[in-house]
Amino acid sequence: MTDASALPTSAAAPRRVHASATRRAIALLAVVSAIAVALLASSPEASASAVALSDPELVMLLRFMAGVKALLALFALGVAVWRLGYPTSPALTLAYVTAPALMCAAPVVIWQMAHVAVGAALFHAGFVLLLLALYADRGDATELAKSAMLRLRRA
Image (cartoon, rainbow, N blue to C red; front, side, top):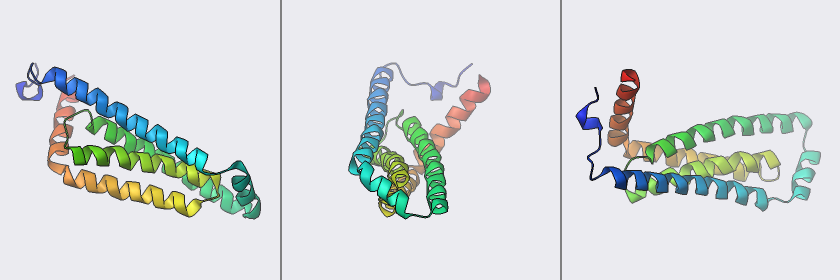
């Protein structure tokens, strides 16, 4: 049996599904666009020059950190896509779209080694924005997470 309060009403269900798909598509488009801009922002010559002028151990360390930041960015993207599956305010939608986009672009910029500081700033700006969005959304997100966990336990 399912909890009646966890199920959407029949009138609201189609609109929520449509809005959910639209918001998720917007989030994925923002992330792909941010990564594309990050790739286009740095020339291969600048990247090769930065790698050649840097200590090989520093390059290895910074690329490892870029990999760690990429994993964190993918986790943030997953959280944002999940949260955008439910109704949110326009301000929270913007935050949930922008934060993972910044975080996903950052490892690409860091990996290229030409603009490491810019990549770090992008990542941390996205991380702070995501934390602020989660803080502002703490009541609704907590309830959604609880109902999702209850549904998983019953399945």
